Image (cartoon, rainbow, N blue to C red; front, side):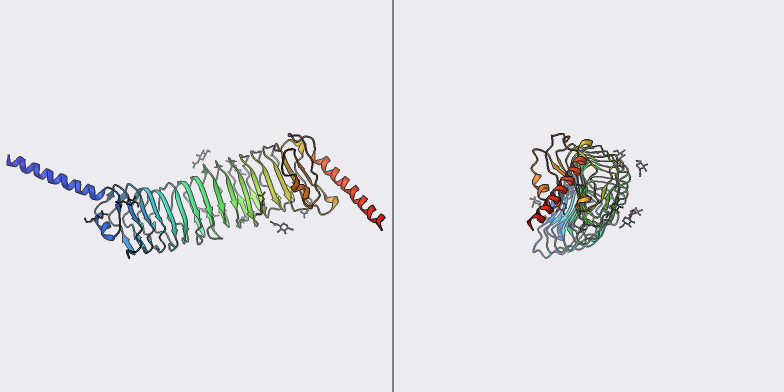
Amino acid sequence: MLFFKSLSLSLLFLASRVLADDNKCSGDKNVTAQSDLDNISSCSKLDGSLYVNNLQNSGVTVLNIDGVKVITGDVEVSHSQYLQTVNFQDLETVSGKFSIHDNTRLNSLPAPKLTDVGSLDLMVLPALQHLQFNSGIKKAGDVQIVDTNLEDIQGIDVTSVKSFNINNNKYIESIDMPQLETAQSINIASNARKVDVNFSKLANVSGDTNFNGISNVFVGNLKSAKGSLGFTDTTLNNVSLPYLTSVSESLYFMDSQDLNSLSLPNLTTVGGSLTINNTDLAKISGFPKLNEVGGGLTMLGNYSYVDLPKLTDVRGSLLLESKSSNFTCPFSKSDGVIKGNDWTCKGEVSSMAKSSEVSATATGSSDSSASATSSSMSYSGSSDSHGKSASSDSGASTVAFSAGIVGIVTLLGAALSL
Ligand SMILES: *[C@@H]1O[C@H](CO)[C@@H](O)[C@H](O)[C@H]1NC(C)=O
Ligand SMILES: *[C@@H]1O[C@H](CO)[C@@H](O)[C@H](O)[C@H]1NC(C)=O
Ligand SMILES: *[C@@H]1O[C@H](CO)[C@@H](O)[C@H](O)[C@H]1NC(C)=O
Ligand SMILES: *[C@@H]1O[C@H](CO)[C@@H](O)[C@H](O)[C@H]1NC(C)=O
Ligand SMILES: *[C@@H]1O[C@H](CO)[C@@H](O)[C@H](O)[C@H]1NC(C)=O
Ligand SMILES: *[C@@H]1O[C@H](CO)[C@@H](O)[C@H](O)[C@H]1NC(C)=O
Ligand SMILES: *[C@@H]1O[C@H](CO)[C@@H](O)[C@H](O)[C@H]1NC(C)=O
Ligand SMILES: *[C@@H]1O[C@H](CO)[C@@H](O)[C@H](O)[C@H]1NC(C)=O
Ligand SMILES: *[C@@H]1O[C@H](CO)[C@@H](O)[C@H](O)[C@H]1NC(C)=O
């Protein structure tokens, strides 16, 4: 009897100990002091989330999270102005978010063993200059690095990400992701002016890709872009995408005044519009297989010719305007390539003899005034919705001819008035 009693007592004691341990190592922990972290340092796994939020005037500058290897919820360290160091010495895995944001003085974030996170958010960390993910993060869902003083993003060694957003980090000069093969979306914008981007293995992006403000880019393995793909406000000299066969939405190269060479030898389809505006391209070429553009075709610049040898179908409108007096419109209304109604295709006219400009606006379009008021000579008329009533060739010569007559008449008038 006594034996059974003591046995059940000790069982009870064991059970309560296990329960206590369970409590200690499970549930969300709101940390306000190092002692809170010392409580859980014997938990190699925390079943819950770890929050360090709003430590404003506590004077805490350093926190050490020792012992904890796995956190099944989130880690969030935020709005703690005086924190300078948060040390995740033993942390390996965070199933939820690893989110460190809005900590103005945080300059040291060692996580030497961290390899797996549900997602990684580093935002508004103006004192953080270096990452200390010494083992390399091998698995992350979304990666978001916004508004930091980081100089590079070493230690993010993922092969696949959901969204990858590196934005407004004024000191990041290099974004090198040698392992990355697939992403759902990529946004690189407003980092250091000279940032070099190398996604040497990136093959597929299932959503949008945007490169803004970069000076070199290597994405030479990209095969498909299921969203849009764009390069804006860059100092790139060239873009080469040898394996890219299709862009499901828009493709654009804009505000890149050093861009003088494009090479997309395998590209056959652009699902949305194709825009090239404000670049240094002297000719539009590098699209030898491009066959189909689902949206409009817009090309503005100083190019003297457009070489799109396989292009047979543009579903949207045409806006080709070149500052070059040498430009000849590569399309005519009769060739049936451009299916959209709005049609502008013109170069700068420096002399009548060189005129090759045709600008026509179809019925129902609101934009006839733009071409009519342009200083260069233009032909504005209407055509039926299939664009078959005016061919650019006859239109051009008619314009040149009638303008010539007008010129002679004006000269005669001037002579007569003398
Ligand atoms: C702990 O912090 C979280 C997130 O900041 C908050 O939602 C929750 O109410 C806090 N819990 C306690 C017990 O303070
Ligand atoms: C740490 O332990 C102390 C004392 O048992 C307790 O008051 C405090 O709430 C614990 N902290 C956390 C985050 O669980
Ligand atoms: C890009 O990175 C790969 C792999 O690290 C390297 O081999 C290649 O030389 C780099 N390319 C450029 C243009 O920097
Ligand atoms: C990329 O997509 C193509 C088909 O679109 C597929 O064959 C290939 O395996 C994909 N590559 C990766 C790395 O996912
Ligand atoms: C592309 O630009 C890079 C960097 O500006 C340059 O080193 C390289 O020679 C250029 N390649 C081509 C084919 O023009
Ligand atoms: C086009 O892609 C194929 C395979 O996808 C590749 O073998 C070929 O070299 C590419 N063409 C060019 C001009 O790079
Ligand atoms: C072309 O780029 C210039 C300069 O950035 C801009 O002002 C203009 O609106 C752009 N036009 C189109 C049609 O994108
Ligand atoms: C286009 O040419 C004009 C006049 O020659 C020049 O002022 C302008 O800067 C050039 N634009 C670009 C993008 O090179
Ligand atoms: C104009 O075109 C001719 C013939 O295509 C070419 O030889 C010449 O270099 C071009 N001039 C300019 C300024 O583009």
